[in-house]
Structures are given as C-alpha cells and as structure tokens.
Length: 343
Image (cartoon, rainbow, N blue to C red; front, side, top):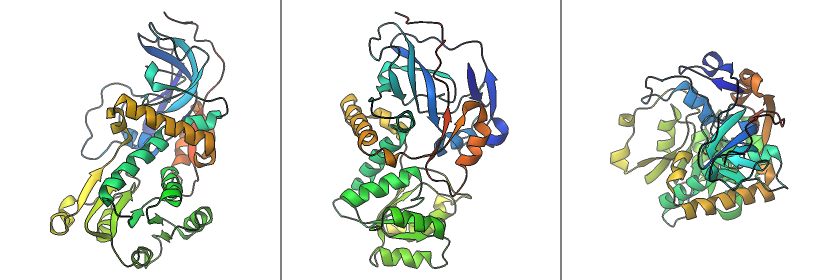
C-alpha cells in the first residue's frame, strides 16, 4: 500500500514523501475499506501540510494528507450491509485519502450514481458542501437584502460554484481575480457578473462602481493575508467578512481593522463544521451535492491528473495561479486487498 506522508509541517515539496506499507488497514465495526481511485489536491490539504499560523503545534507521528476521494469498497467491517464490496463511493470527511486505501465510517461513504464519472465523483462532496456552507453564511449576513456581495479568488473551483449559483439565484455578486487574463476567462463563463482584476491600479474604484456605489454587505474571502485590509475597506458599515481560506501571502492583524468603529463582523467558515449538522440536514446536503454532479458535472472541473507517486508534480500544479479546475491524484482499479468482507 502506498501513502503520501509528512512527519513535520512545512513546504509540501520538502516535507512530503511516499511510503510503502505491506498491506491495507482492516475496517472495524461500522466501517468500510475503500480502494481509492482518485482524490483531489485541495488548497486546504496543502495548508494543513504547511501549518496554520497561530495553530501550529508539535506534530506527533506521520500524517497522510487529504480529506476527500472516490474509489471502490474493498471490504466492510462487522455490521455493515451497505455500501457493499465492489460499490463505487465518494468519501468525506475521510482524513488520509492520499493513500491507496482509506478506512471510513460507512455513513461517510456516499454511493456514486452510475452516470457520474470517477473524476466528477472525486470532487462531488467538499466543494459543493462548501458552497452550501458559504450560501448560509451569506444569507445570514445579508439578513434579507440582495447584496452586494464581493468574492475573492472567483476563478477558483469554489469561486466558480459561487458565481454559477449567483447567476441562478442571486445575490448581486462582484468577482475578484488576480489578473486581467483571469478576468477575461471568468467574464466569458459568467457574462452577466462583474469581474475585477486586482492587478489593475484602480481595482478598488472598479469594485465600488460594480457594487452600485455602495459598500458590500458581505465579502467571501479565501485569500486573506495582506488583502484583508482592502476588503474591509470595501465593506459597508455593519458588513461581514466571511473568511474560508488562506491563499494569499502576508498577514493582517485584527487590531489594524476598524471592526468596532464600523460594526464589522469577521466570520470563519470551514467545511469541517458541516459534520456538526443533523443527520437529516447532512442527508439533504449530500442529495444536493450528488444532484450537482449528475446535472452539472462541468462545474466540477479537473485541471490535471497525476499518479499518487507523482504527488510532487501534482502539488506544483495545484499551486499554479492560472490553473483552471482541481488537480487529482489517481490510483488503480486493481483489487487485491486480500481481506474479503469482514462480518
């Protein structure tokens, strides 16, 4: 069994390595063993390897990155009747998916419809569920108003999902991207939505004009860093900065922001909080994610595919600013766990 591991936090290109083990783990009661065929390289996966400022602690032992993937059920533990061995499933939350096998609770293995391809299934859960988490945070921030809402990294995989949802249902969304070429690409995809490139010297004025001369009531920000100060300056008094990523460089101290004077709110959103929703709520969210994969697979775009052993090239590709879609690490369909069904 192959797995990508790191024993310390730092630059993924330096701290990650490939490890070979004699065989896969065994599923326990209520668990399934999944032979993974594809798993995404999410920005959050790389941030977890690098370490989050202020949360970095002493790492104990080797860790395997990844939280999402798709594959085939290889064997099941006691008490599991569904999904059965041989069934294609998407898994999340499933820490350690950058490996040939992963063991997860049976309730975290979502059956993949026959018409959904492997690549789409590998991206079927985290980004659509993140979209739902962000949608709920924006609704709360707007409090019945229609916007305007500003989002950064609008050309990212999640950013495009947010833009597609805004075209269908609102609110008034203004998109930020890094470059003029990225702006052209996004305008071609969503011609009805304003797009502003932060490489333009007057990008802040462009945002204000696109927002109708008023401050944004909410900002969806996956960049952070030094951009945060500018984003709070573009918020209306009483607005909300919704942060859900760390793609940018540098830092901005909270003490530097006029939060109290202007009644601003900073709210963090992470897909990990999705697991705290009730079983009924999670089931509805999963149904939405599966439906999106069935009806709009083009919104779950793949940038490139690399074998698990080529993880360094995959990580380098995932870091490219101009990439479109999500990089996948792939595996093999061959069976051979040798364990059978554990009942």
